[in-house]
Image (cartoon, rainbow, N blue to C red; front, side, top):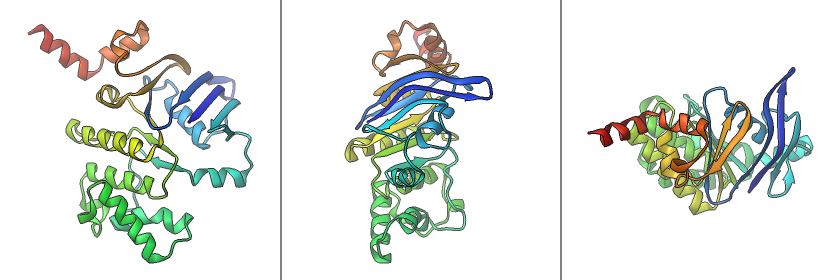
Length: 252
């Protein structure tokens, strides 16, 4: 579990995040949603230590990440997995080598065990047959699955995903959503997903934090979002392509 308490982040004199309080639960897909510029990415960067909060706490199972020493933070990051919007794969490395890379950097495994573990993770995302290919030789959806395999290769307790469905078609997005949801439950991970994809919200939104202009506006889940009384949330949800299609279908 990750808890955020009174988290504020200022850039110069401008407050980008203001007094955010939130709980991200273990074994659930926790989504952060909001319009562009709402502060979603800034919040995630504060959670993983890419930015330092102006004030407040970020607690990993009770451990305050903000107050940790540099050495403690390095050790803490070994418990984290990251999936970036672009995938961030190394073009010069094969699929297998990309997945193995964190093991090369952060584990004491020998070569045979590293390869075995990397192949286990590739098998989990159904990409074992692609291990010898390079990122430029596989589709965008396959690249995201490689990124997921790499993110879980160190058995993280916490998984962070920044717009994991960016650039993907709806069908492939559903595959990625299901994979993230299944892995979260299978490994009992605290998964936090930054997204603007309302399909993802309605498919896997077990714990949803809605941010508006740097402030927490609403917390709930996919079953409650349709009945939410928050106008700003409604404006975001019902302006999406997903709900435009639903309304059009209901009108016919």
